[in-house]
Image (cartoon, rainbow, N blue to C red):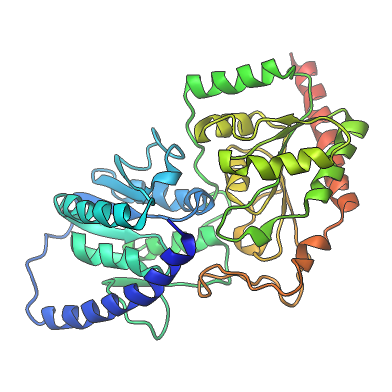
Length: 401
């Protein structure tokens, strides 16, 4: 289903429906329904649709929700494209996936979804999807208790406990502030905001190991994962392909690194363009794994180099050092936390330029100058720094045996 169409429907039709329901809710509040007794929150719906990266950054908040309500059943509603990220984790008990296919199929599935969600009789709804009317509508329709979600001044809301949405802080802190609805007021530490590790099965890890073994990779190799892609949300986030190609060649020639390119099946042509620009042969595994196998591969990396995109956050969740490129978005907002991660950002007057309030749409008239200003040489210095740290860590490990 076309992403631009989804944005248009949500911002136009969703707003009209939400405003109508807001007036209806005000009238209904004059005749309040029965409420559950305090302390009887038995079933919670947590909503987070868009973005694997956002899901990773929201995982500390979901972990805390579990700690606050240890006896409640937690149901997680997300998109089918996120399937496999936090399955078999302790963040939720059940997951419901919403598929985005054709408009007609989506409509039919949506109707079934609403009936299915009503049967749960949720005591509490927590919507972690910022400023999307669709999530607000679901929150209003399927629950009988409090509804917690983000709002902004001047916008009517269907939430019983609205949380101020801010775009001047790290997104993990933004998600974490929903916990203020339950009395959590303390400023979270950086450690508290570290994402939940993604649990992997033995099969996932075995597939990754077999792929690497088939490509001649050994435990003694310095392995760099590279993601040249960015999702349809904003392709303007991509560092130039020729820069990636030059950087990969430098790492192979100077550090004897093994370069492993990753990507989804629909990203294969773009990855192949990068390969064609390189003088040296990388290991191209784009399109050859599913999501969980790709995560298992990333977990084997000594360094992951990537645009601001979902794979960056997957590497972050797996505690893999990263080098990332920002411009349309800011690392202050979305960059991984901690000294193991290096984010390049030139901080031009026009940057960042994509926000939730403009539906994450970039209207760049400078051909992504913010990213083109990031030079290969300065990035290579960070690669070399990571390489020497890897050598030191390996030597220390050998001496301890």
